[in-house]
Image (cartoon, rainbow, N blue to C red):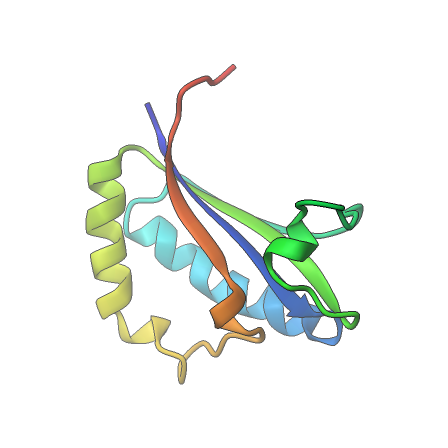
Length: 117
């Protein structure tokens, strides 16, 4: 089964174009190092919750939007090797491709696929 990396972040709404540029630079590198697909989504209907929600999880501020992204890998092994290569690649440095958001509030995790239709 495929392996999925998932991400949720709060991005200043005024940085939407910068975020698109950032993601557009990074996505081909993920593909180069083994990812099958990279999907970036800008929040459109992301309600605040009472107990939990995407906005609460990333401590979204009034001037920010929620971004939800995922990367599809053929396996955990390919993902682990790909991340090593990504982190060593000079094209992924903050100087080469600065993050237009607060990376401390980025939520990230790797997931085993258990159902796929």
